[in-house]
Length: 113
Image (cartoon, rainbow, N blue to C red; front, top):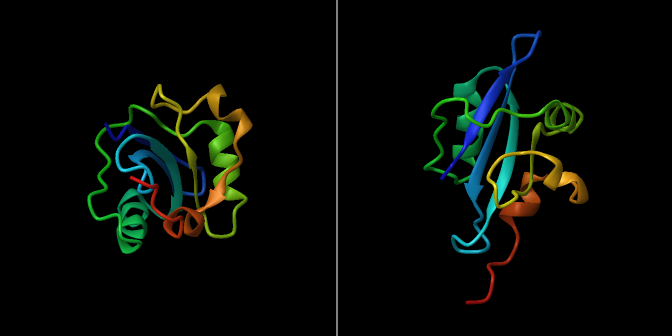
C-alpha cells in the first residue's frame, strides 16, 4: 500500500516521496509525504523520529514529481504532506490542495469513530 520513490538531486541530496496511511482516518485514506535529506536513510530516519516507525522505501514506483520537488525544497523544514488521491500516485489530482508542514498532520485530532 505504501507507494513511494525518490529522486537524487544534482547537489547530492535526495527527495523521498511516500504514500502512507493517514494517521487521522484510521486506514481509510492516505497522505503523500515528501522529505528532503542528504540521503534516503536520513529521510526515513526523519520520519521515524516523528513517530512513523513502520516507514520503508521499497523500489521507486512513485517518485516525486518536479512540482513536488520544488515544493519540498522551498519549505524551510523540508518535510511536507497533503492528502493523496485514490490512485496512490502523485499527479494532477493534487492541484486543489496545498502542501502543509508535517507538524500539522501530527497534531490533527483523530477522526470520530
